[in-house]
Image (cartoon, rainbow, N blue to C red; front, side, top):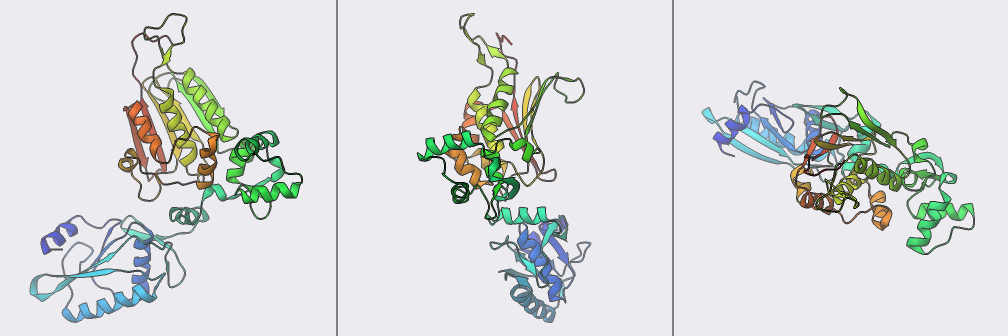
Length: 391
């Protein structure tokens, strides 16, 4: 980094990836800052820079002391130890700014020496103090998944007919002879916990009435009268619950009955063609059901307006996935147990990462919004009044 580049960085001020410190003397405090950066997206600490951005610098002897403190903090005051880099930038009067770079950690979560987990929050840091936030951090590093969470439902809540048909069709296997055999099978299939309860994947896929066990995980569908919600009332509304295949089927039916149909030169007795290809809606609904964040107790919202359809899913894109990346087919599996069973034909799931690309290829007028502050992911499918519509 040149002095000019350093001055530009300082002119931007402090944020979640950049912090100023005039000096450091406490290895514990520095270790907590390192842990916060490593648990977030990484960043830099500019040592020798005052809070107001003044380049005060450090003396040569201070630089020696600070580098020793950095080495000590990274190795002994963060668990697991972090690998950091330092760079010395000379300024006026022979003084030096130390640029301390902490990368995004590969072994998250990182703790300070006292066992506290810190995250960056704007230009400061904060400690994790809720189970949900801790679960999400473990989820982001593939050490924890919401679909494996235990529920209050015993295995007797399994829908025998649906699960029996699945066993027969996919595994050519009969219904287990005893309750113990059933429990062992469900545990081996990652659908039940060690203590004999269905996990979330087991409930969402095979329970008799999932909406009674987990009422928050439904789809709330509304067809509004215009393009502004909540103001002019609605034409159609439905709370869609049940196992995920049923939720998908009924959500598709809701959208299809609220779309225009295009005659497109067909005879008057032939059914019209939906204004938006059904495949587009299939891909996006499957994506919402599979990839939503099940750590958030909220429904998926399916909103149909005059000129757009919105699918609003709880949870922003995981890790460092971005809208630009999903448009090119990148994907991170948030709920691997659900994904493994959906891929066995429970939903029209055609391949990891290909759904968004396939939807865009068939209907380019789709926007994506990743709201990290609001923890929501919104897909907007734009409609246009087709010529010759019949409904």
